[in-house]
Length: 222
Image (tube, rainbow, N blue to C red; front, top):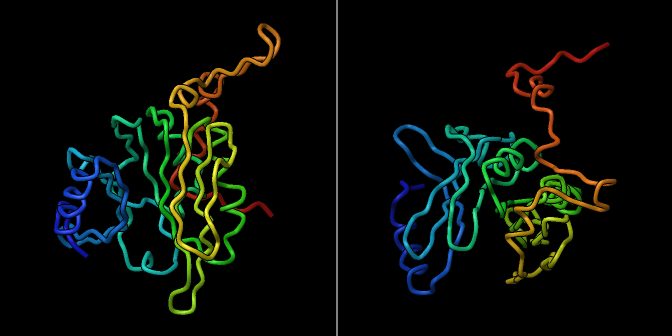
């Protein structure tokens, strides 16, 4: 546990400057009397931004942490506009949608998916990309620790919801894919001009969605 900026981010900045790359790394962040599950975005110019996990399951280290206290953000970089969320956040479609409305081209999702979460890997990640027409990079742990086995299967999904590349379920790998920022920025889809067109952002009806912004959970109907 450390502050941001701090020793780890300083070393990462040095690496990014040396290699000319951008990285997203998770760590436990101390801030005054609080501790957050945080992901940092770092590039050759230094610390670009950080995201504190907003949705915390009663699981693992998240049981003992504070919920994120900042809204979702999108960071403009030379490689595209990047939005960051963490693991359980992807189960809440509002997370991805907010970042896309803020202009995200690529959503980054560092995760710790254990066995039993295969549906998230196989379906949810691709759905988030498809329903928002945004590229999504999901990076998951692989291997075992303290009796828990992690699924691996990190993947890069394009803005049409297609898996471009997927990593192994039992070995560490580096995976690559090429995506088009222009493709993610074009939300208007024309199948047949004048007959079959849709715009995933302009066709929304925000005036009908107020129910999802209420803090209280509705009581189940009998």
